[in-house]
Length: 283
Ligand SMILES: [Zn+2]
Image (tube, rainbow, N blue to C red):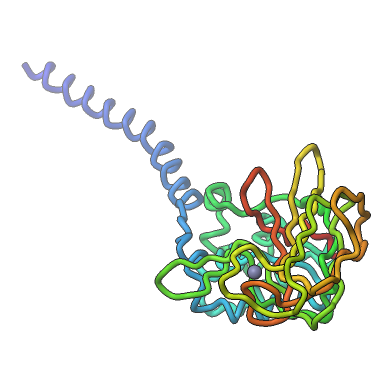
């Protein structure tokens, strides 16, 4: 009896030691996972419900686009803002810009900066889960107009009203009447439609007033670029004409549904509007 009890205690002790030896590294691994792999979900509605802070973003956009520094997406700005509301738009924009390439830095590059190193949005899983671009991209397009003398009046996916979603799936650049608009690629003019012979608005016109549609082919993909609200009779091209990047197509106007002279710059890929400014080379 005594021996059996001793043996049981010995076996129990051995069992506990084995459990301890096995469990410790497992728990350490779990612990490590908790520390480095905490999933951070970014509230995407903060990007889409951009009405309250659209003006803050526009002012920093204007400065950097006019100066030719490059374009940083709202999604990127919000990504860092979601972690620290005390960061300024200016600060985030500048930190996310590569001034040599004149484009948004890969997210990992920004996160490697000392100040962001301990941010939750900068842990590897958060980056992996995010929709942030983590590489430099080719910029096939030229500028649609001279950026130094324009104002961004609406950015891509800007929500222009509270409540009812009235998202603008293009860019609006306000500029003086007749400001030249340029072909962003070596492409072909698809259509030239100029129904207005006076530079006047028409709030019932949902087609964009005087307009030109340009076809750009890049990497076997077809992009359609729409220039809208153009000045009457300002077109310099005709349907079917081949154009080069930088060629003047027409002048800025305020024809159609418009509240002032501006260029509506819209890019479609596979039937969907995409962010055209992501394709523009600022160098
Ligand atoms: Zn527009």
